[in-house]
Image 1 (spheres, rainbow, N blue to C red):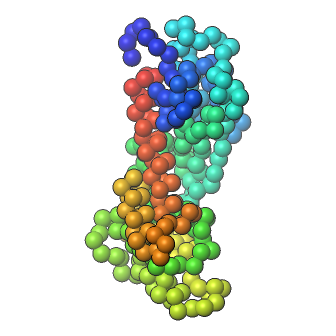
Image 2 (cartoon, rainbow, N blue to C red; image 1 turned 60 degrees about the vertical axis):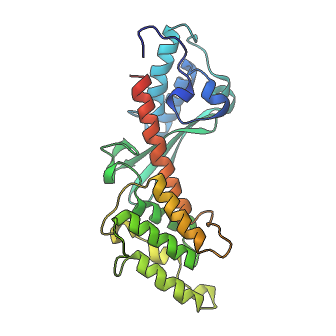
Image 3 (spheres, one colour; image 1 turned 90 degrees about the vertical axis):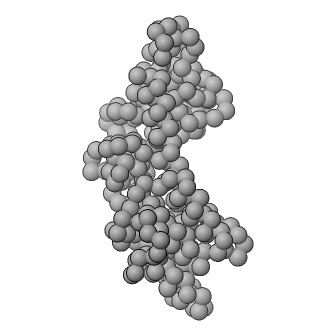
Length: 264
């Protein structure tokens, strides 16, 4: 930033948000509310978290005269701020921080060391990996019997995680294909092989793994759709899980770049 701040730092300058919130200046009371939410959830202000970013931006806005010390943005004041925690596979906890109902920061914590998803220093290469996304599908759709579309999506995910052009012998893709064939010949749902049967501990079963990207999500979704009779993806299935991981990783990367450019 220039020495003399020409305009207020807005939420849209810092975070991947849309609509009215993106145009609102970050205000001191917004930052204070987020700090309270973080302290309530984690017991301290998160390094690199939303509260620290908002406090820095709000202080700059106040010094430049764009906001007063007791100001709050209408969106944050009316719809509130929040910090929530969700358990994720492989021992991770996802901490999601929101302003006005829009996620501004997604962070994961593994082994007691918090790191922004998509940044160097985070566990497993700095983001939610494809293997972890497959394990997450167990939480959202684990009871679903494996179908041809699921097997195709799992194969696409395995290929992208391992950078191999063929499926791993005895791996999760091979197991999914066998399960889909078995289920097609089985009439009783209770006897069918489920996603949980195939994808439990998926990360450990992959010979290699890496953080999920948008291209990975598109590839997995395409494979699932092409092999579905209705050309759709399951709303909480394999493709949806990889897409969620890719969004979290991309959002964290974008947020970090914006923060480095504007706040520091």
